[in-house]
Image 1 (cartoon, rainbow, N blue to C red):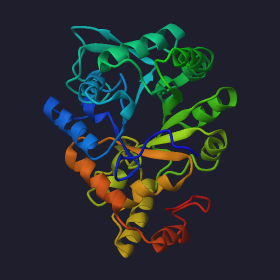
Image 2 (cartoon, rainbow, N blue to C red; image 1 turned 135 degrees about the vertical axis):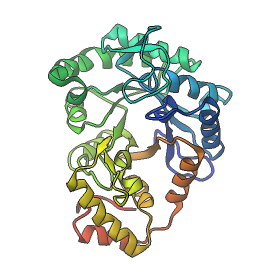
Image 3 (cartoon, one colour; image 1 turned 135 degrees about the horizontal axis):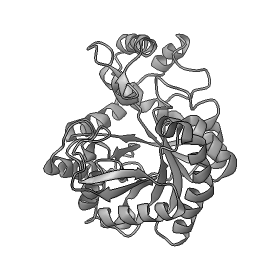
Image 4 (tube, rainbow, N blue to C red; image 1 turned 60 degrees about the vertical axis):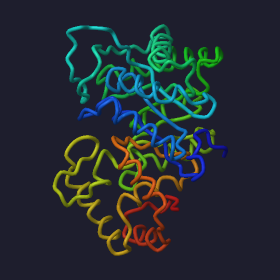
Length: 334
């Protein structure tokens, strides 16, 4: 299948830059450091970038647009998201939703057709660009909407996606997808609508294989290309279990995830494979996955990810994981 998301120019590493840390997720990043990161990613050949209004209430979009605007527009793929509108408020808290030192806006959910158009147009204003490559419908799931989730999903199918199709016809974007960590939501949408791409976070990783049996084969069959986020499952596959601060899905890791990760770490040690290298390389073996999106905060993290993708890993390592039941039988390996 033809990739939608380009690999890094020159190296062909299938690595893109995720923009959540550029919105000051958990800790503040200076404007200078944010610009240095994007410039370093570009210099290394990265040509796939993702952001969202949610990330710092527009801060990530502003920073990414400022860094990318001087480059030829056809040379990179840029995605943002719809579903949340930002409204100015001088009294807005400077820390919201895990982001700190954010811009003075409050969020409101809006999956209506009018809200979808406004969201795309507002994002383009913040980015200082005339089009997106991808607009993802952001977080249309039960974790975000609770009892309203079925109503939200109905609106996404009936209003949001048709509005995005119209914007696609108008040339404001090239592709439409969902940005979510909920496999069931994607499957429900695919029952009724067509998607071009998918930003799937955390549900196909070295640790969590929940997208493998149903969703990934359907994506292959229907030509839906995947940009995969959360390959470290928010931390545990980057830090390992030894420091006692491991996180899974942005919360302290439950015992089952700690135990499973510890087993993977033992195989890594036996084969001299860094855990981060295995976590980055494993999901790229699936034919539905175009690229891994890395939410780097600084240049050193970006450089490390490139090194981990280049790390040689012998077939015996993957065979050992499978033999211990740590990889499903149907999961392709590099």
